[in-house]
Amino acid sequence: MANKKLQRIKSITEYHRSRGLPKPEHPLISLVDYEAIKHSAENNSMSWVLDFYTISLKRGFNANIKYGQQEYDFDEGVMFFIAPGQVFSIEVNENQVSKRSGWILLVHPDFLWNTPLAKGIRQYEYFDYAVNEALFLSDKEETTIIQILQNIRQEYHNNIDKFSQAIIITQLESLLVYAERFYQRQFITRKITNHKILDRLEVVLAAYFNSDDIIKKGLPTVQYVADQLNVSPGYLTSMLKVLTGQSTQQHIHDKLIEKAKEKLSTTQLSVSEIAYDLGFEHPQSFSKLFKTKTKVSPLEFRQSFND
Image: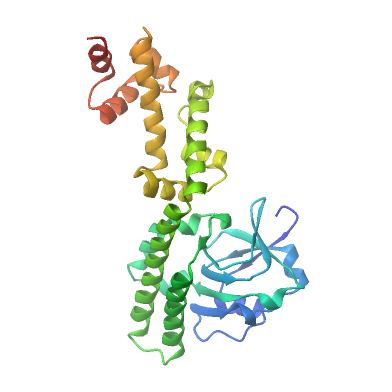
């Protein structure tokens, strides 16, 4: 995206105008039919930042979508989520645009103001996933999502009254929860891909703990591990929680404890020396973490092992 011009779109009205759409029926929420969107060759040279949430359901989109330096080509039904402030670009294949279909829900943060969802929406980690970590829907799941989207559209299309926001928020919450359920199903059903990530996770952690990096840089961060696996931190943690019941940070700590036990049982190094070898500046911090994880202190572990 380095050579692309960056354009920020601050409002849903501005988005409609830039895509050749009629003025939105509601200034803070809109459901857009992809078939109605007008694309120009100029858009292929642009990167975009939107100041509102977008929830997209795409089928036969025939476009390359880029995050960072990576490019992904979607030609089947997928769903993905972009939070305000994220940078992305779209390069449409103009020779096949007639095949694209789907919906994009635009929700300005102001629409959520003074509702529990204003803060609650942040708990849905898939807004931080990369585009290649999109949600692949079954036909039944797609039908469910489309029905909710149509319910939202029908509500703001009708005469707005004091109940409208609450009804739409309820529908939006339902959509987000369904998406979370479907993502968890995907983590389980796409076992081969996800188990390869698990295997690579073990390799990455083993290599790090067996190198000088652990002394020079301390414990590996979740961001570092995710970068090595070419996935986003949020996606990695969500996947691990479903498949193993533990977060990325817990996996890092487990590998740390494994190495600590190895050193305590096979060497004569002091606890302070082991703590230093494992990237801790203060032995007390190492001992505290070790006891939290094992219920015994490093010295107690070594003594029990030697008994």
